[in-house]
Image (cartoon, rainbow, N blue to C red; front, side, top):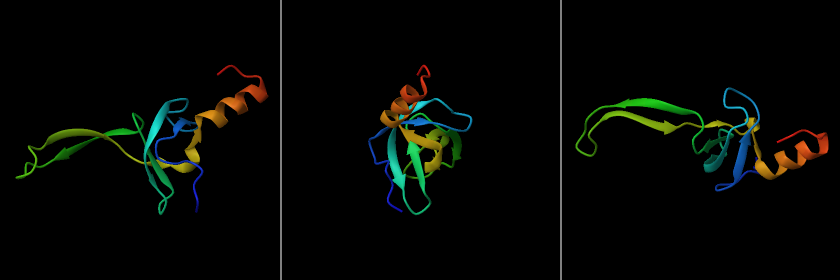
Length: 86
């Protein structure tokens, strides 16, 4: 699947709990059809102390399905056509 959304694009979440949120794409995962968006779908992970890291609770972005996001430019054009306020 060739994705329209690429790394670095500005996107808007169109469905789900983060609906209406904007962010920049950090990573595209084409095999699972998911994207990682900056500041969206943040979860906490408890990591064990190792030689490389101290461990503790780390917050990081997790992937969301590519169908739940839309390029910000396309989203604004769609809103203009419908006559809705962005």
